[in-house]
Every structure is written in structure tokens, then in C-alpha cells.
Image (cartoon, rainbow, N blue to C red):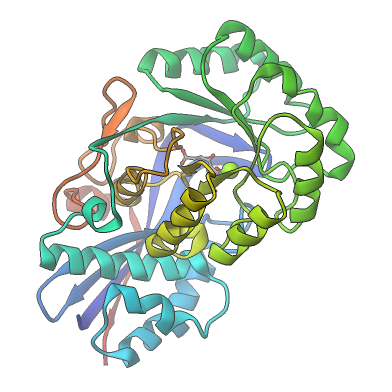
Length: 369
Ligand code: OSB
Ligand code: MG
């Protein structure tokens, strides 16, 4: 496939409610969208999951755009005729920037699959038509507000609740929510907010029958997670630390994680995600699909990935309405706590061009030389 031109837009979507985590509060979702057009007449779309500021990972929107324009796209143009499976290799000389790399690979994959008439799900190896949905619940202003928000999600049908925690917002919210919903699958996510000195505190979460504790310690403290995992009963699940297949392999070898959150942007794309999935299946490690407040474009591809056989836990694959009143594609609507895996070619969603135009904050066209 030969790329003719690339459109890079920044858009800003309002959120239905503020989303607070241990690393900050988001009031809207600004993000980077990429559309590629190829000489064969195909179009491919992808969104870059980097956030505006480097608070979750070192990557950030303007940085991703810069590395895409300055280094990654020129390397792809120079490569010439390219297959999606060749993108990661072509970009390997440039270190890091997995989210930026994933954007390019996903857009090329979408274009190629549209030409071939194959859906993302079939290409990746999905064996389900629909997937179970979980929801990530931000840190609330009060316990009452949290209970109200969780009640809403439970009545919407979500099959798993994930509470964001941080020091000072952990044991109490967990015990209240577990007390009100004794049976619901429940897990917590600290986004690196604790240290090795908090092992005794995190052990106090054991009685609440949580599915897992997600990324309690610093992303680089893989050994600390192994030490913690040896002390607590609740399974430890890494998110931020898993930036590649190799990182997943080593974290498993160290027994730092017994469940893995696969986020395609964080690991450099969907193909790397499948490699990590396969590794986990071989090792009997359950995986689930994380989220980055994606629009319908990223969500579509995530839902397809989550339909692979090793994804045995509900992911942060929520309905569009969890974050947005209006999505930039036909919305993902949950039925009985499940989302249908798109079956059309490529990511298989319809783009709402008018709405994208309305919320565009910048637009740039890059033509292949
Ligand atoms: O740690 O899983 C995370 C959102 C932004 C950055 C990091 C995380 C999250 C979420 C929301 O928890 C997941 C979603 O998109 O539903
Ligand atoms: Mg997380």
C-alpha cells in the first residue's frame, strides 16, 4: 500500500462529567486524529491515545504530533509500498513513542483491511460477536457522589466496576461500594499513586474480594510490584509498566503481575497487543482491554481486540455515552452490559465528518513526496 496523503487533526470533545484520577482531572478529551489516503483509493483512520499532558505516560499530544511529522511519517514515506505488518519494523529505529507509532500502524491497518474487505476482529483473531463491558469510575468529590455514579452504571448494566483510588481515597470507597454491591465484579486502579511503603495499607484491600489492584506503584518499579504481589492476596495487574511484549514477558517472569491490562496505544499498536495476548494465553494469564477515553474510532478497534479468546475479563470498553454525549462515529451502545464487535471492513464504524469538523481545533495535510 502506498500512502498519498495524511491528515492530522486535533479535536476536543466535551466529557459528560469530569474524570478524576490520581494524576489529575480531565474536563474534556482533546486528542489527535489521523486519516490516511492511499494510492489504491483507501482511507484509514486512527486516533492517538496520548493525553494533553504527560501525566499517565511520557507521551503527550503535541509531542506525538511532532514525532509523527518529524520522524515517523518521513520513514514510512521513504519505505514506499508498505504492509501493516511492516510498519513496526520501519519505525523501530525511533525509540519509544508507542502511542504515536500505534496511530500510524492502526491507520494503515484500517486502510488495508478496507481494501481487503476484512474486519479488524477477523484479522486480529476475534472469536466473539460481543464483549462484556466494564466501566472506570473516577475519584468522586464525596462518598455520596460516588455511590450515585456507581448506581447509575450498575443500572446501565455494566458487568464490572473499576474504582480509581489514591492515598486517602481507597479503603473507604472500596468498602462502601463492596457493601452495597456484595456480588459485583470490582477492581481498583491507582495509576502509580502508592510506594513500597504502602504494602501494609494495600493488604487491607484483601477482604473486599477485588478482581485485581491495577498499577499501584511507579511504572518503573516492576520489582516493587513483585514484592507487593508476594504479600497481598488480591491479584496485581500492571497497566503503565507494560509498554511492549518484552516488558510483559519480563514482568511475568518476575511474578510482578498475574493479570495484564492490554492498551494498544501504550504498547505500540494492535499487532503488538496480539503478541502480548498470545504470550498471556500460553502462560495462563488473563488479559483485559484497557481504555484511554477513546472516541468511536479507537473504541471500535479496542472492541475488536477484546473479542480475542484470551480477553476473559471485562475491559474498560464502555459505551460511547460513558464519556461523550455525542461520539464522532455511530455510537457504541451497550445492550445487557455488552457491546457488539463491528463486522464491517477495517474498524467498521461510520465517521461523523460534520461533527469532527465542528470540534476540530487544528488541521494539517501532509502529502507524501
Ligand atoms: O489507567 O486505565 C487507566 C483513562 C485515562 C488514562 C488511564 C486510564 C484511564 C481509565 C479510563 O481508567 C478507561 C476508559 O477509557 O474507560
Ligand atoms: Mg490503569
